[in-house]
Structures are given as structure tokens and as C-alpha cells.
Length: 173
Ligand SMILES: [Zn+2]
Image (cartoon, rainbow, N blue to C red; front, side):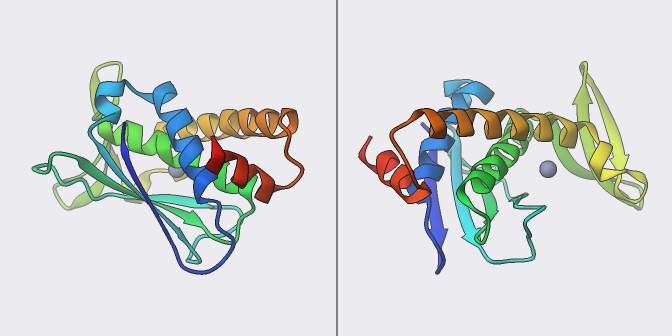
């Protein structure tokens, strides 16, 4: 399994739920073999993020380390369903990086991202790329929507009345 560390100062804590969903979603996204190489650091923070943009992945792979480190930032003030949906979105980006389908690079003076589609690597300069319609964002938003649906089904079918009860259920499992 991936190593998962969750950090937060202040605010309502949904760490057990975040851990449960990380462990539940990773097998849908990648092989166990690849998941075993991950060292995920989930920081729940009150930051520049907002209700409409609840997550981010910091690009910090340490290539010579045994485990690949990725830091996921989740917006602390978001409610549980939004935090889990954001987690799904960001885990898809971690997957894209870990599978070497997405990366950062420069071409001459231009900085941007590369993306592998059908075996071909394409360069997307930051200056001219519409973030919203980029293929890695479309893929991440689709997985986010799927996560949101799966989460709400799980929550509504279970014996929980509040998100804090859900958090306790995740802790006991
Ligand atoms: Zn994204």
C-alpha cells in the first residue's frame, strides 16, 4: 500500500475519511505495484484554495528515493463531500505523474507541461494552454465527478447521519 500521512492544523478533521477514500480509490487508478511506490502527504490547509478549487498536487517527486513523494493540498474549509471529491481529482493527477503520462518541462524559453496521449508526448506551454480544457484536467474532473457520486451513494446507504459519524465509521473499520 501507499504510505499516507495526513497533516492539519485547526478546523474540522476528516482524516479517517480521507485515508479510507485514498485506500479505496488508488486500486481503481493504478496497479498495486505502483501504489506501493507512493509516499502521499495530504495537507489539509486553509490556503489560497477555495470552495470552487478545493485541491492541488505539489510537484515534488524525489526520483532517487525508494518511494515517490507527492503532496496533495486539500482546502480545510470545504465540507466532507467536497474534500473527498477534491481528493479524487488530485489522486488522478498523482496517477498521471506516477504513470509518466504528465510532467513539467521547458522547451526553449517556454515552460509548460507534457502529456502522453496514444503513445505520443505533446508539449503544452503554460502561456497558451487553456487549463480548463487540457486533457489531464478533463480526466481529473471526470474522476472527481465519479468519486463524488460513489461517495454520496456510500454515505446515503450507510448507517451514518452526520459527516462526523461517517468519520468515526471510517476510523473503526
Ligand atoms: Zn486538476
